[in-house]
Image (tube, rainbow, N blue to C red):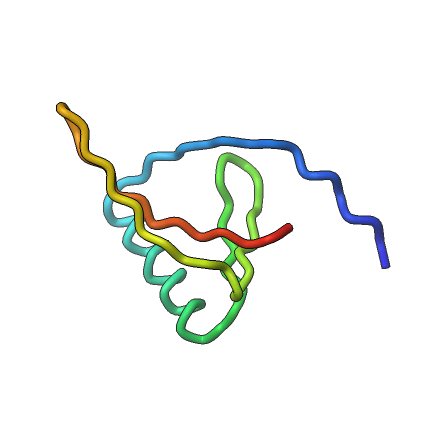
Length: 76
């Protein structure tokens, strides 16, 4: 079994036009429903989301803006 590549800490935020974002959400939803791994490329790096990922929704409200995050977490 090959050695696992050491993970480098990363914190990337990428903006998408509404149509592309909706397409990614549809692919994610399909994978979640089927219990399959979801793969996405973000800023040049492919990320594979485990089908066992914990899914949460986060809402933040400030004085000037609101934020809604759909979050998936899984062990490395």
